[in-house]
Length: 136
Ligand code: IDP
Ligand code: MG
Image 1 (spheres, rainbow, N blue to C red):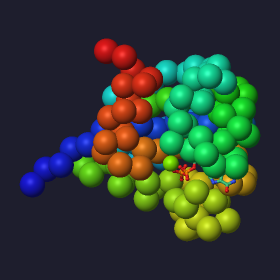
Image 2 (cartoon, rainbow, N blue to C red; image 1 turned 45 degrees about the vertical axis):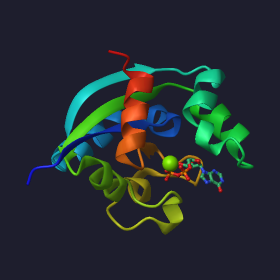
Image 3 (cartoon, rainbow, N blue to C red; image 1 turned 180 degrees about the vertical axis):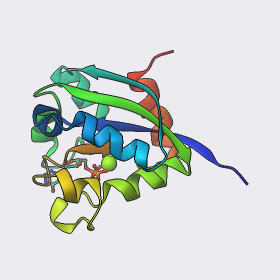
């Protein structure tokens, strides 16, 4: 049975800064994701704090929010069969050091904070994150 899912992807400041946007979008397209919507934006710190609210008690929360709001990002709605999990698999582990060969974070990530991409971790969070960035 078909299980088409939408998920939220972000190309983070480190990757935008290194001009990797087109290359990373091609990775998604080559892995049969459809980019339904996309926009390049720069967040205010308060936006990043709201987006990463689940992490507010973590020691890295402040740095994380400073980082995500430090430069332009590209946010996308991706669609694919089992899209949420498929995107997490394509991204690889949070820390590029632990990411498997061929994953985006292995290929492009610099460090655990500058790990190039964000992807929703569940269908419920995907829906929340999509409506956070795309209001219609
Ligand atoms: P995820 O992006 O793989 O879903 P999360 O645990 O949701 O990972 O963490 C959100 C982001 O916070 C990560 O992508 C990473 O950039 C950053 N982060 C996670 N754990 C650490 C840490 O221990 N130190 C610094 N940054 C971290
Ligand atoms: Mg996460």
